[in-house]
Length: 64
Image: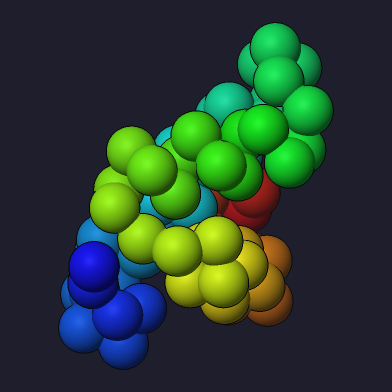
């Protein structure tokens, strides 16, 4: 299990991008999409939520 702190900015941006893409596709609920992306990147839901908040706060693509 990786800590959100040990992930590089690029890795966190990739995870954020993956989450936004899954959520935009509307094939899963928000909860399901978070679960899928967290397991895909071997991180916890809590770590994913930190990355999500960081991405939103910093307007990471694909939000920008």
